[in-house]
Length: 360
Ligand SMILES: [Zn+2]
Ligand SMILES: [Zn+2]
Image (tube, rainbow, N blue to C red; front, top):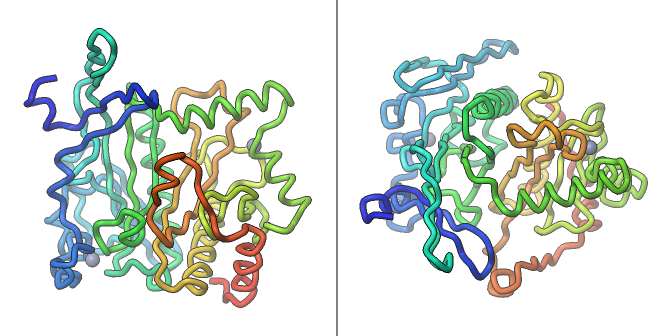
């Protein structure tokens, strides 16, 4: 790989752990609201995600609006077609500092012993601004914006799944500095790549082998077992279930998943999306009542494109992963998480908050 190529995103193979590391040198220059010297920049005037500041970001690819309770959205195939709606509630655009940008796919380069193996990584990196309000607090955003956010995620996943060479689409939210956020204004991100991550491969292999052995979907069985046990269930609705998983990797972790088997999030009905929006809000608001300024990630787990054959063994889900502290030495050394809150206790705390909530 030439020095010119190393300035673009690429992946390098780590032969000791048998996994790839993504390098994205352009992201080093991105703005960071959480940097101490930038604290004065937390005002809406300096925020590229605020209303009236749209010119500071690449053109919108998806725009969601609402009038009364009616939601509407527009999607564009290319960034040349600029959408400019002053009344936007949620909008999507390409990340100005992408971890992964659209590049021509190159064959991986290996040296003789595969000590220095690398490959260009291609795909896209998008920002989904999920509220007009200059806030990172979900209680200061509206349910309408959350309903639009879920539609934006559905439409952008479906768009990327139609693109050639895309093997994986990751959707996530980083809220708070210790969860990896660099800008304060609430937003989600989508990264689509030609690279199939090892952790997802492990999840796939385990799900497939469970289905081959038992005939059942692994997550369906986990939900059935949690519903039978009841000690970690925090919500059971018409379409969705929420629980603190038995082996939660993070303290106060919540998993939201459809009660019946569904592999593809992008095929969700509007009713399901509305229930997801409500449940994410209830979970985050409950978490912030218990730990007012805690950072968290939301992680979407979905059937990747061109994997129809695995539809029977894969079940979409969304994990709320609170981040009271950074990953520490033991976790880095061993890959084993240490969780200091039992999920049974976490479920009790969520349940008591759910009981106090006014449902909007
Ligand atoms: Zn803002
Ligand atoms: Zn299932």
